[in-house]
Length: 278
Ligand code: MN3
Image 1 (cartoon, helix red, strand yellow):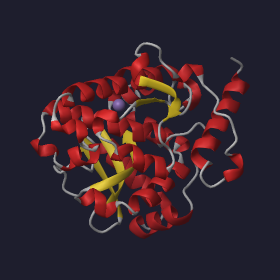
Image 2 (cartoon, protein in one colour; image 1 turned 180 degrees about the vertical axis):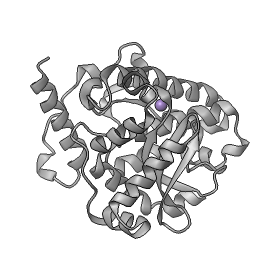
Image 3 (cartoon, protein in one colour; image 1 turned 30 degrees about the horizontal axis):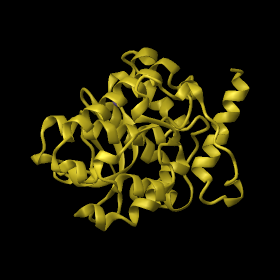
Image 4 (cartoon, rainbow, N blue to C red; image 1 turned 180 degrees about the horizontal axis):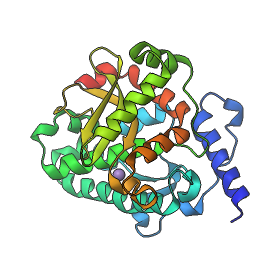
């Protein structure tokens, strides 16, 4: 496919999924299928017409579902859409092998147990009483959904509105925030994640880092929060392009951050804080 057509498709999808709720005039835009972002290997678990939830209302609805009803949704863009920051092969393997694997293993781990009926946030809230299989795969599935949503082919720049204000309040200014967040990713020993999260108790934004597939919603962390920006610093996220240079991957990441998505998550989740505390 012509690269201009792919770009147009990506932009159309981004415009529809990210801004569809506020720009009602665009609601009639037809969803354009991006063949590259679909997989045919496990057709049953993939619904290519249903993008990962990007709008806050959808996002909230999705994670409130009983865990057994969660789907492994299509990527909101093509595998090559994030190039040259993240190469096509890395996105393909990361999404279709790693992420899909976490999803499949999560579904298998909860099959026939009471966890099937529980929203994933409730599983995280009691993660210390769960098996490693549930912890690693529930985390792996959830964390990667955020990571993919948090990026966009036309991402970058800086946040605006309420999110920008909250970032300035918590960290002083945007530059200080990105430096601290990057440091959290760079200093994570081994595999793990850097996060921007809403403190469950105070509602303030904070930066944190977790090992493996843990996340700030789990009850094993020092400060619990609802993550709104996720950065995967496992080597599988960057090794093909960057080899051992994790810092370069993190620097490049900022040019793809989907700030409207992060802002939507901030607004949507802030209202749900009490719910997530339980
Ligand atoms: Mn990963």
